[in-house]
Each structure stands twice: as structure tokens, then as C-alpha cells.
Image (cartoon, rainbow, N blue to C red):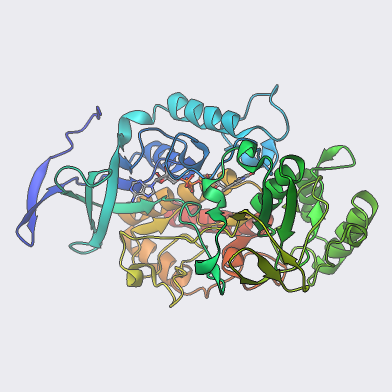
Length: 457
Ligand SMILES: Cc1cc2nc3c(=O)[nH]c(=O)nc-3n(C[C@H](O)[C@H](O)[C@H](O)COP(=O)(O)OP(=O)(O)OC[C@H]3O[C@@H](n4cnc5c(N)ncnc54)[C@H](O)[C@@H]3O)c2cc1C
């Protein structure tokens, strides 16, 4: 690690422990896509940055070498290139519309190299505690990943948390699961279709990952069942020869009312995908846009929700009893912030942080979370603008504290929690930080404009 500044500048004390003062440096937690954008945008706004990354490389979840990476061999982007790339760093023209996960990693590595981000990252270093310190500053305690070595605490002017929300498996408890003699894995442990070959496989979960694995099981396994809680809308990757998210974006930009967009897309799906009930799939119990869209052109059959497990079988809500020897639970992930006290993020009883724009702490103006979003499009452009907004906010605080306080009181602290999507999304854990990218980007733009007006005035 080489930085232009000395990492251990001055020593303070907290509960008898030394605390190394990092002055005006900002701490970033994690060097995945969100952390990389955070480092780059904070640096471009003149801040010193110390980023801590528990793994030994950049790329977060897209780095398949990482312990907690959720990607599997065949994973490709489901958002197309222009909606996935950072606005200031395009993906190569000769890449496909939906690049493979290995290309996404290579893209993130190129981004880190192009903007010279690695010198600001402490690899193999895990953040174990982030605590408020004097006034609005933060004490960040780190140690080597795996718990080796001593803990060290540094004091920072601000903290940007970019620890990702796709690494802590959400495994529902089913009646009888303990007595089941087959193998049960979470999708995060699934890497290669060879694991399915010749087996009788039950895939649980109707999200994009569940559908991908169900398709692979249908090709590789001896027998495959796909259990989903409800019927979903399945969008093809291409509509009218264009990536489907690009068509959706064009429609969104026309600012048509939600009912008209729902009607248009439902008709398009009727024409392109047809009525999936012919293949034994259930009719969606909700309107389009009310759950995260499933982008899959291959999935064709499905069974009911799980009622209970028995020793050698699983009972489903439609009355069938199936006998899998491998169950893959593609039941999603739970956001986790073990290094922060829940009250710091004003978290609700079920652990949902309550943040302005799902990013900015209302209670602590120098704390933000980047990337805690589930978007109808790619994540990286949204994270780019979130981190630009945070950097500009910190600059305003420094340059004009009085105006900054007015801005905060009038916007961030005042605005009630909102869902940044026109649709009435399903109230499941997977959907509480669901956003429509057009509405969300407009809201970020408004914040950035407000901050700029504050600086100029
Ligand atoms: C199967 C799958 C398919 C997806 N497809 C798409 C897609 O098509 N388009 C799209 O835009 N998004 C997609 N996503 C979402 C994807 O999660 C994001 O693109 C992106 O990886 C999120 O970036 P992040 O930096 O916020 O989190 P992560 O990628 O999870 O990175 C977080 C980083 O923080 C580090 N970290 C965590 N805790 C600590 C700690 N305490 N101390 C130090 N370091 C820490 C981790 O090691 C990791 O490197 C997909 C996700 C999955 C699971």
C-alpha cells in the first residue's frame, strides 16, 4: 500500500486504545463496484481516501475468486451494457450486449487501473467496527481478514459504506427441513452445472438467479422442479431486436402514466413470450413492475410453493410431493452491516436501514451507504451519481457550513421515506430497496443541483 499521505499521522485515545487521526480523509468500506466508484468520485472532489477491502482483489461480488462471490459459471449481466457501465467509463464496443461475469470483473479491474484506485485500497483488511467519534467524525476499527493480527482504529472525517448486499444468504426455515436427508445448498454455493448432472433437483425461488439455475437444471439434471412463491412476469432479453431494458428505458422517458406502461409491456410480453400457463406456470398475481423483472428467455416450467420437507421428499402447495436429492435455495440475500450499531442507520426492527434515497443517513450527515439498491436497470450508473452527490455534499459542508445545514434541514432530514418507483412494489425483503432507475436518477439529480446552488450562492 502506498499513499501520498502518511496513514498514521497523529495519535488520539479512545477507551485506552490508540486512535490514529486521518484528518480530512474519508473511509470507504469495500472495493466492489460501489466502493470503486466511491474512491474515484471522492478523489476527484479532492478528498484523501482509505478504502478497506476484506478480499485481496477488487470487483466485489463479480470477482469469482472471492469467498462470498454469488456468481456462478454461466452468470451474465441481465442489464445491458449502456445501463450497466459507469457513465464515465464505457465497456468495450466489441463486447456483447449482456457480458459474461468474467468480462464484468475485467471491466472493473480496468476501471480501478484507469483511475489509479488501487493505491488507496487496503486489501485483506476487514472493517469490524464503525463508531461515531468527536462531533461528526468516525472511528473505524479494522483487522486482517479472518481475525489475524491486532485491531487498529483510525479516525475519519466521513464514512462511505459500500459493503454490498448480495453476500449474506437468506435461508428460509421450512417445516421438516432438519429431517430432510437430501442435500440443501444456497445458490451462493452453486458454481457449475456439473453439480446438477444426473440429480433430481428442486430449485426454490423465482428471482433471476433461481430461474438461471432452474434452466441449467432442466438441461443437466435427471429431473428438475422449480418452486416459486407466485407467478412472475418473464421478460425476454431482447424486444424488437433491442435489449429489453433499452426499450423499457425509452418508454419510461416518454413519461407515460404507469397504467399505460403496464398495459404496453403486458401486451409486448403476450406477443413475445406468450401465455406461460401452457407450460404449467402460474399466472402472475400482481401487475408488471410490482416485482423485480425476471429476464429469462428459456425458463418454461414451474411448480407450487413449498409446504414442508419430509425425510426423503418435499411437499408443495399444489399438492404434489417431489423427491429431490439436491435442493438449491435461490432465496436471495439479506443486507448486513455488522460493523455498525443498528441505530446508526436508523434500522427498523427487521433490519432495514432508513436512509434518504436509500443512501444518506439522516441522523449522521457524514455517513452514507452506496449501492443499497435493487434497480430495474444496471446498478453502476446509480452508484456513480450517489457517490458524486455524497462527495459534493461533503464539499459543501466544508465550504459553507451554514448553507449546508440549511440544505440538510430542508431536504435530507425532512423528506419522508419514499419508494423510488411508480409501481406499488411487493412488500418482500427483496423489494424494499427496489427503485425505478429514471425516478431515482431524477431525485439524485435534484439533490446534486440543490448542492450546486448551495455552493454558488
Ligand atoms: C447473480 C447476480 C446477478 C447480478 N446481475 C446484475 C446485473 O446484471 N446488473 C447489475 O447492475 N447488477 C447485477 N447484480 C447486482 C450486483 O450485486 C451489483 O452489480 C454489484 O456487485 C454490487 O456492488 P457493490 O460494490 O455494492 O457490492 P459487492 O459487489 O458485494 O462488493 C462489496 C465489497 O465489500 C467488501 N466488504 C464487505 N464487507 C466488508 C467489511 N466489513 N470490510 C471490508 N470489506 C468488506 C466485500 O468483500 C466486497 O468486495 C447481480 C447480482 C447477483 C448476485
